Image (cartoon, rainbow, N blue to C red):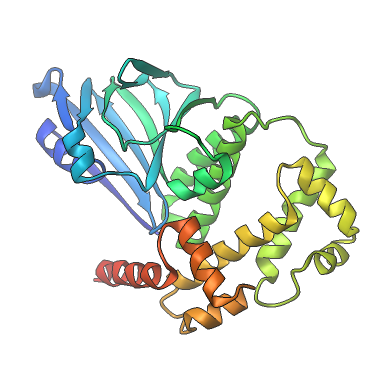
Amino acid sequence: MRWYGIPANNPDSWTELANGFVPMDHQYRDPEIWTAALTAQETAVYRLLRWDQRGLRTCNRTRTHVRDVPGDDFYWIVVPQQGVYSMRFGDDVMRVPPGTATVAGLDVACRLHIPESTAFAFQVPRTEIDHRLEPRGPMRVVVDMTRGLGRIANDMILSTHAEQADLSDRDFNAVCDRITELLCMVAVGDTQPMRADHAEVAESIRRYVRETIGRGDVRLPAVAHALGWSPRQLRAVLQESGTTFRDVRRDEALRTARELLEDPRATSSIGDLATRCGFTPSWFSAAFKERFGQAPRDFRRRRLAEIADQRP
């Protein structure tokens, strides 16, 4: 995982920095005293930013910006810690105070109001959210981060930032996967408490499948037997947690494949990697592209080029 910190002692330097993520027009109040600092953690899949801003700015993302850089392959999740962040889409205004988070795309014209503030911005591949929420229109959601799963997700974001120097690509992606899952559950209101033992079993199923893919049998009867449950009981537990065994196995297999494709030491062909993860080669390519937005071969090529560029 790559991480870095950048101070911005004047508006011009911040504009250049911010437009490297999402191009916009920036306006600053009291530019002569305006300052900010940014820290970033990123892999080929996720990006987590934290900014500290002293001063007010507004940002306009115009139709020209959207046409030139669509930004339609990811969502931004903004989690204010201090200051009330807001977004305007036409006549629709979203206020995002501390204790909440917004999940929104920047693939349409919009206006952002960012006061003196501290906040996290979490960039998530659009496919990671769309395949769970299946939105029928623009994704613009504000969720509660003060209780239940929202609070857990908020704590995970804070902890991920605090451990930035000690996380590998695999660690960072795994944590970001879980944060995304929790936020999606909050967004759809799927926050009813589960029995504690069922929650533990649901997580143990995911963990066992993740650790066993490519090494052993991850079909439902074998997983149930290994965990001391019947297939019927496993189905019931996963249904209570809002998923199915088929979806769990597919999700964990695709994530394992992603990790293998990111590994510069891996020499397996795409076909061998697909077989290892339980896919046929043709289905694997289609499923991977649907989930991560790129064909496996293109993902590997881009990721290995990024790793090579980071080497001294």
